[in-house]
Length: 179
Length: 179
DNA sequence: CCCAATTAATCAAACCTTTGATGATTTAGA
DNA sequence: TCTAAATCATCAAAGGTTTGATTAATTGGG
Image 1: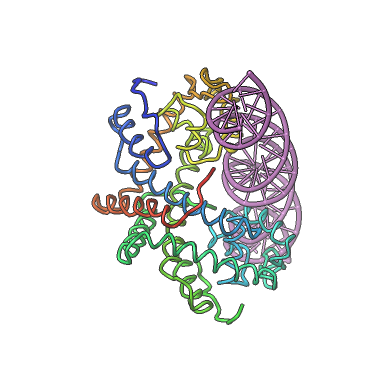
Image 2: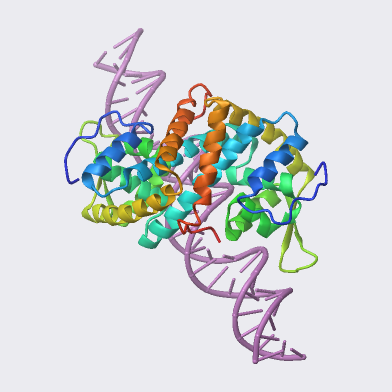
């Protein structure tokens, strides 16, 4: 817009990060290029992995990615209150509410009123839900393995360490969290 | 479900990864725990960063996260064909098509038929779109900086390197890509 | 003991995404 | 040259997300 340096004609999902960082530095000299590159790359890598998992494993089995996340959480930590499910599967209470309609309709989970607090909801897997996660997770984990093979074991460790450190910094960064 | 080891009562978005990996190993001994931990952590870290950027920067300014991505791509690499915009902003052609309706209605972008190929669409920012990205990106980049401060400069570099290596492995992993 | 503030869940409207189908154009091969 | 295959964009249906109400139940001072 400001300058008319023609962008390379062969821009791809991959090469765009480098191009974008350089161009942004020219347009806006005050930009924090390293931070920009980090967030851009983080977003891209994740989006590739998740798209692969969802489209190659879960959709063909009749689950969406969010649906899988909920069933997965209930498999490992359920039965539990809806509030907790929302928290650990990383979605808002409202989003979970909508999602549960589908999962309940498909017979994968059961909604029940909690004993101790009649406002609260107790969620649990049905037999069908249990079956779905068992088969789905094996396939899911095989794809995770395939992705992980790109890195050496120490590199995987280091990646996890850095991501955890990044998340831990969210407090200092005063990040906004999902309510 | 199989075993009835009660999950810790204080499960949070953060602590769930450790808990889940351990529990999955007990339920399914053949699981690739390292790969599972890597993908789970990657997903969580990204989701925190993106949620913060979207809810604290873009939504208050009237843009969704996908809307921002498109305007951002057009700012740096535009004007360009819709096909390229979809590619570099990481969405399918169909998703972009729907998104453009909103952006066009809000007067941020212009859709035009391409000269050389009457099937193709040429996209460009309007003055309003240009204004939106200038202000929005400054605030966006400030939040990126705040996140990046959690890591040392060399750590940021290493994180980016590892993420790029992971993405490069998608070929070997035979990952499915967005069409 | 009672009412105000909180908290759990849901609803509603607006949006974005996915897959699969349909309409135009363009390209390539017989 | 002309038709079959490929390509670009859009549509349609089903689903999930966000923010901002709204309803029901619980809690905590006064």
